[in-house]
Length: 103
Image 1: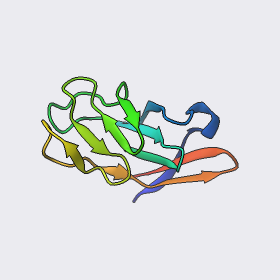
Image 2 (image 1 turned 135 degrees about the vertical axis):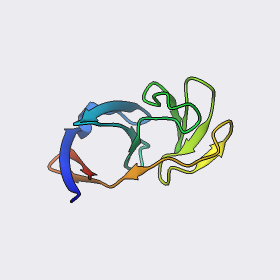
Image 3 (image 1 turned 30 degrees about the vertical axis):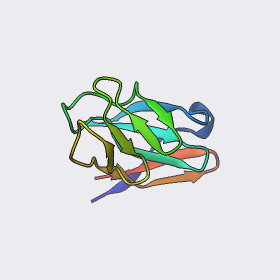
């Protein structure tokens, strides 16, 4: 059963930045677009490498390894070489703390 897990404080991730976290066996990356916080699996679908060192511009996260781009709001690929979207997670904020819904 999926439940919300506390990950960080909103202050920990400035606007335009990303940060990777491990929650049990799950690796996730949280992105602060300035319009909201978004979480997705910290693994590029192109070659299973981490996205957490990538560059965020607007709603698009660029993989630092081969340049694939993903829409952080949906996980959809916006630029190859990746062709498969990645999983996203629901995020909620309570009292300045970020929670991510994990199975």
